[in-house]
Length: 582
View 1 (cartoon, one colour):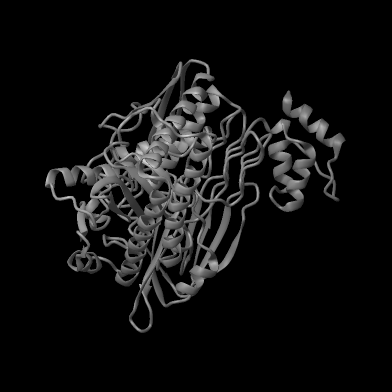
View 2 (cartoon, one colour):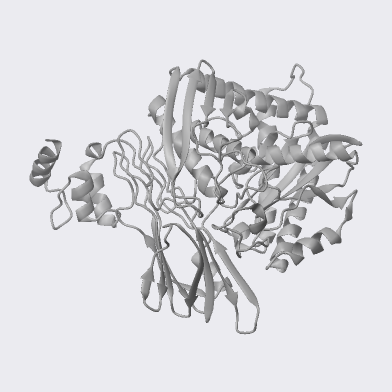
């Protein structure tokens, strides 16, 4: 896009910003309402946006999609731009499809559709859609394979190819993808929903350009990027110069039972912020590696949590330098497995929060629960039909400067929702015997971490295979500014001789259960914000009354003693706090 002196007034800019975001929001809504699988339809694991014609950078993204896709999709669109330039055959009416995690980010389950948008025969921008498909082959139904040592064990890998060529739909591409999925009908439905979303986006953008003119909207794109970058620089300039470090750990990679380090050295120098992840562990055997584009996208998400007043576009990253050496587990290439990328980027976000707590405590949050607990159940119904249940589960968010963390929220990489139990029970032969908040799971603090959850699932079909891909089984979510840790993740599964736990704590394949047997999952809470001794005593009593904290937890974590009627016993509390402070 050409840089030139902008002649756009603030009111018009504000109107266009809203109108452009509305286009992306409508694209989101179109897919959510038409997708076949609950991960998109209910959990909203998808995203849409408008991207620069030359660089692929994010210009506009919908508010309902996943923020982690903002950075990743910029790489995905650039991959299409490079592919089209190499082939020399980009045409109006083209739609590219691919899921290559090393050339566009995330993992094989996330399929990207990218379409060039033309005005009067000239390329103006790109529209793109990404959604998490139900099953894309591989060794494990649902594709979260904790034992994968190469991407070929995680699913089919499709490089950027034309699904629609100059308006002509290529059914052969769809046939190949359906033949490699355990859920071909779901795949076709999700694909159709994404195509419809792109078509709607094209119509809405055409109407907007017809109303305001191509040049005016293009000026708005440039100005919105510039303003995001300027605001980011102003925010950084207010922080004290220096280098601030934070380290955190993953339980293991699913293959070797050893911890993996995610390390950050964050440097503030004037208006520039440098995030250096060079001290992180090298690439590992198992599927918790991530590609460079995924790492950059997760940095974007973390920064947006800390500086939430900055508009959501690629201008956010202009004054930020990201250093990720190729030898680390944060910048791997094919065929290193990356299926469990969610667990690693959550830890990457945590170390950004931890480092920022040392720079600007008033801006940082306690760590969220730090795992999506990807759980798959699969089997055959009595009539022989295959069923595959894949879902993720919630936990507590970190306490923050303005209050307590969110109870039972979704991971901070997204604005997705946790699939409702009613939807899961209606779609699959399973029954939730428990779906509840987990007492004492939130990290203690002046502002308490949010609570994790307790889930218990009973199998209603004769047999099922179970696969778990989680984290935070050994390294609890940290608090900031003196806040306490959230509870650890726990998982157990019922067998004829009782309950068992995975040898690697948070990851396991090959679990087999029978009708009437149960799975039990207790998810972590978020880390606390500030010292527990500074929490209002009435807030502690209220938490006990609501069941968020047990009386024992109040005494242990907050040094607060309660009367039988639930009020604070001030005398006993003062004695206990005096004893603890000695």
